[in-house]
Amino acid sequence: MAYGILDDGLVIAEFVVPLTLRSNKPIFMSDTLSLKRSSRRRSAQRWELETRLDPKAAGANELMAHIILKDNDVPFTIITPQNIGVIQARTSVSAPSASGSAGASAVTITNNAGLIPKGTFVKFANHSKVYMTGSRLNGNGTLTIYPTLRADVVNQVMSHRDDVLMSVTYDSDVVKGMVFDDGILMDVGVVKLIESIK
Image 1 (cartoon, helix red, strand yellow):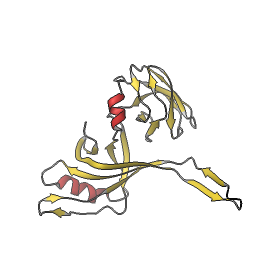
Image 2: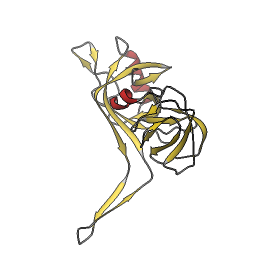
Image 3: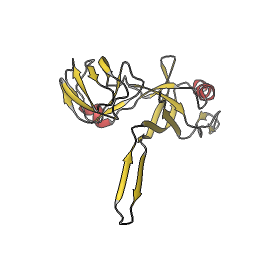
């Protein structure tokens, strides 16, 4: 499966390694006079991806138009890259259903046949947010997730393979145009994509 940028249902640019997918979660830390460290977490969280792109059209015209037309404020869809360890370990090919309450750090999974490894990116049918599993699950049962649920999930299909779609925007430092390498290949350098939080 090709992980990359989707446009009209087609992957117009694949992600190229090295690829960084990080969790941005505000944590406020301070040191007391006795040098004891205290921290305070916020519930907000988003995924941020940095990668180079391999345009799938020979002239890269679709990618160039996409970058210019989407700018920094129009969300678009990517196929979320799964960790290689997840890909090698997973055996679940089913479409499991999930249920859980807003604020919960775990969901109840039914209709699952096979292993969903720890560290798998997942998405629920009624959510725009992408989550990561914090435990492994073989068959049905309870699956911990990160971050906590933003809204209730009631018997919603859970995407967990190469079908996890994330809504993102381009970061402000992405080149808005064409950069040619050797006069032929389009190269926009490292692109940063920010999960679109609703």
